[in-house]
Length: 483
Image 1: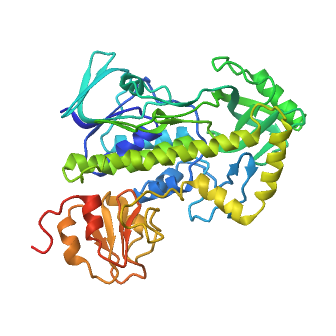
Image 2 (image 1 turned 60 degrees about the vertical axis):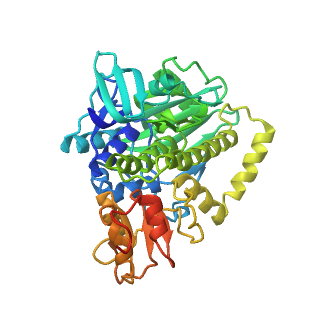
Image 3 (image 1 turned 45 degrees about the vertical axis):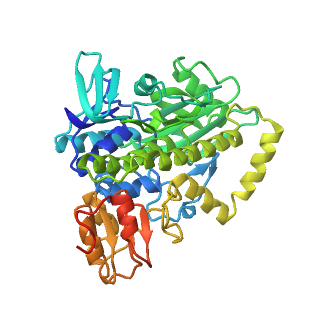
């Protein structure tokens, strides 16, 4: 074997997975067909659950130290959600994808892992022991497992002939990174009476400290073929149509056309090959949910691949990647489709759509509705099925970042191992056979006993016996319990 895991695609999903494997002591090779990292901003923000997962690996503070990444409001279907709608202690941050990729590239390089660029995958073959990947430059890599994080047009997915059902793109919109002059519209979606609309979001600042914005434009006549270049005149016309003379273009840094295609693979696992990120699910980029969902795919899959490589993975553990992440991805597609309808992307001004939006906008003024929508977008309410232990309200959800005195829960998770919180010091004997995989902590803390997986999700909570959950998620003990 050349490596334990080959990762195809050095975007946020692939680099997050590479770091998870690095944390777990598993060798990985990261390849990408591009000759250099993209300088395009792409996704514009990081949701609460992803921020928590980064904090669990000690990466959040260094990431936020890379620049001005303000806390900002989210939206649902263009309806702004107030700051206090997000009840989670790490609210949405405006961190562009390009910043995340640059940060991970430097972090991985500091630990000796460098992406192999100019590696275009052209073939793969798997057998009972591993996967062999062939590249256009004539090289090959043999690995135990391969993870496709190679984007919406995934070569791996095509080579697998994996079904990618869903809805094809029927229109395009313009997304651009700009500097603007004139009045400074707040983060907003603004509609004109003729159906034209614009959305603006903060993207931090350029190297000179000047504010950057993500501008999105749509409406009648604006859906052009995806390959049609976006011009400055098109941007100026869109701004003028929606804002009049109040706002004008100072600089166009980057622009592309985005389709409303919505697809998801039927299976995230194909033997020793796994699909993650845009290779597994694509949709309109609302709320940066695509990037966040991909990074969460990586956090979910990483520790499971490590368990398989280290030889202690329980039977069917790798299958839980699909069982947990496919429903999560499907939920994102559903909320994005609903938002697309309510936002009237095509600018049809259909009376039925406008009536539905008017009612929904009124409902969104209710605090309970705001909380529900913010929870939906944040990823914090994704609940994984945990067999036999679903009666406790925390089971299946992200563990709260409790302060246990010597350390917070997130700090304890930086080892990449599981954690058994044992406040009454009652489970020393039970936990000992899993001590190479699970750390015991929290003695004397004011918390219920709970078992937390390496990805930060609670898989058991007391009262009761944690032994069945330890065996279910962390495999056979090193020696029989009680021996």
